Amino acid sequence: MSLVDRLGRKPPAGAPAPKAPARDGPAPDATPATSRGMATPGRLPTLFTRVESDGTLSTVDRLKVEIHHRLIDRLDLEALERMENEKDIEAQIRLAVTEFLRAESTPLSQAERDEIIEHIVWEVTGLGPIEPFFRDPSITDILVNNARNIFIERGGQLMRVDAQFRNDAHLLAVIDRIVSRVGRRVDESSPMVDARLPDGSRVNAIIPPLALDGPVLSIRRFGADLTADELLEFGSLTPEILQLIAGCVKARLNVLISGGTGSGKTTLLNILSSFIPAAERLITIEDAAELRLQQEHVVRLETRPPNAEGRGEVVARDLVKNALRMRPDRIIVGEVRGAEALDMLQAMNTGHEGSLSTIHANSARDALSRLETMILMAGTNLPNRAMREQIASALDVILQVQRFPDGSRRVVSVTEVTGMEGDVVTTQDIFRYRRRGITPEGRVVGQFESSGVRPVFMERLRVAGVELPAGLFI
Image (cartoon, rainbow, N blue to C red; front, side, top):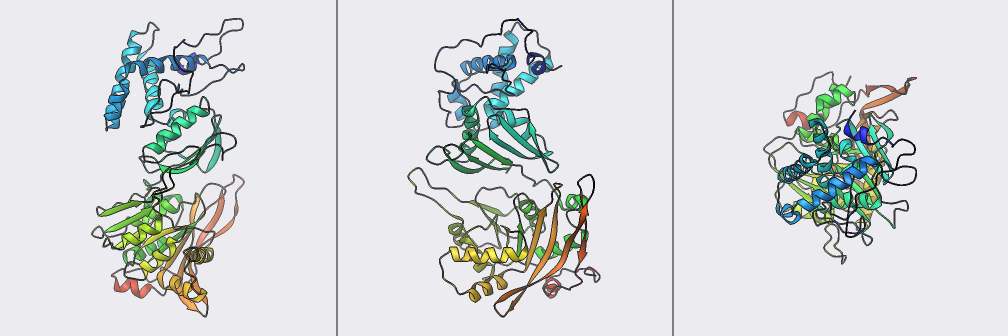
């Protein structure tokens, strides 16, 4: 039995409850976080909060509070602030905790000491109670609805976990630590924030007064480690589809990835980028940098929210315009969601072929409609036909991805944009996924089909030196 489990047991009936360690100074959570977001003496973070029926902290949490108090007394926080290397910071914390435990009279095994040290490190430099879930590669989403309600997604299924933050202030400390590392802030005047973790995972936080039940933290794990072969293994697409879209990228066709939230658009975009020749200069534009391209010549740009005075905002449209002056071979917009759509389409039409982007839409046709709406957001007052001509001329392929009820994600259609017919943008499906039903175990059953249509862009692929099998579309 681990130390945490052994100490987490309730005392026998009639036994006096252990008292929390006395400490002079401000009450818990009264001291603000440091600029780096590290815990301070006022914040008493714990790993797994166990609250007894009378509302007091459990034994294990009292132990961790005491260790954390003494740790803060020993550490030189100003010196830690000047240390840039995260590993050096962790080493200093481990050394201080090891010295403290060595002086303790409580008999602890080496495994128990290591466990305590690891937990304290997580609290001071990591994500506190949710750090173990973040380190589990099988978990794709960590959803903190408030300090007491934490859910995770594993294998496409949501489930509640027993971990808890001690209170709202503890959760706010972790949120502040995340956003401060990427130069952003969250407070009552700016209660919503998008950020990222060092591995590229996407973070969104919203706090009171907008969140009525306490701070809310959503972490979407990054899937850049997936490869094209793994997508084939998972059944997300077929070898024929992969061969086609890889050829489209190599031949510099403009590709738009469409899908709903959590459908795998960004993951697919990263995989497609692996087919871009290494000699090309790529410029990425994102709200929160999460793309991980494999090429060496990559310039990453990120938007900036307004400061406390409401000034200094840099939107995606500004970055797209600036990227055109940076001699890009391809421009990759992480997600098009506003007026930057017009500038992106114009870039595709003016010598920047092979650009990639994602968009939120439920179908390829809906993606085209959303692009029209975004162009109107730019305030250009273009006629409908002019907008659609821009779209039809710029886009070549739309990949529609979908997440199914069983958690699986698939490329449900590969659609070619063929041109204009009257005032309508014409498209044709090349491949599609036809859903057949669902098994008693809840697994979605279906199959990929070819429409039998030979794409119009096949000549462009041939000229670019991309040869596809003759029977690929049968």
